[in-house]
Length: 388
Ligand SMILES: *Cc1c(COP(=O)(O)O)cnc(C)c1O
Image (cartoon, rainbow, N blue to C red; front, side):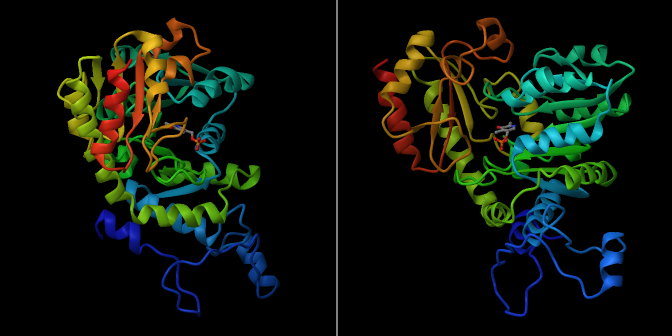
């Protein structure tokens, strides 16, 4: 099989009679049949072909095929957003009365799904904290069906041991699902460590340029079949336009992620030396509490750096106010460097106790390091830090 970079570029929809070099955009909601028999056998799934774009479309198929290859999966399905991928995956696989075990450090809307929406169908979730992996097995019950994690976590950039989680899931016959959004398949392939399914928000580093929303689930083909049937009937499909954009983005994923990570490591090293910084969290800094695990399962450290500014909430807000070039925005994984202060913004409505459960200290600043020249990024952070 070809290398990662080559697959990202050369896995391509079959050329049309026009012999185009780059994949065209297939903006069509449906597809035509030759005759009654062609239509019957197509709907009976006796042949693999496109019927209707809620089911499949050449652009979404190209995008999914690339992610399947990159993650070492068997099959996949593309969704309108990352949350549509996550919700549909859970909704397809769980029955009323089932139970989920998850790390507490999950994306905010995933947390809302676990605590506000899944309970409507009598599906409960038990959480463990990132430093409580010893407790995982004690949380598993007779009706537990899924073990769910994100690594690195958002926004505190903690690392969970994929191999360990994979072993626990296997021992207890759980479906092991990993949100691999922060790492991307270029840095980490959870299926190698025992994940049954991998979910992504393609909105982040996969697009990488802050343009379109998207999500994808890939993995075991029997589980994907259930997810596909759920999605094909309930309608969370990715639009062909977004799939076309995202498939193009994948062609440059490897070089973008390499540069993001190179810049992020330099930013982390700069911050670690700064007198107004209490501590820095970056997976590939030796000071990271799970540095050894990160080195084992990740090819590079990722593009997210978290640090604690001295002076708590006040200093965090003052830092944001002094930033000149970097963007204040809720997105991440963009070419543009983005800084956020979770305790006063995205997580501002949580109590301090709840924030601390996910590692959000008062002065925690999250940086999604972009692709500007690293000296310019550091210059901006430096002047903002010096004046707080
Ligand atoms: C953004 C994000 C999501 C949700 O993705 P959307 O595309 O915004 O729906 C899920 N998980 C993680 C880790 C994310 O960063």
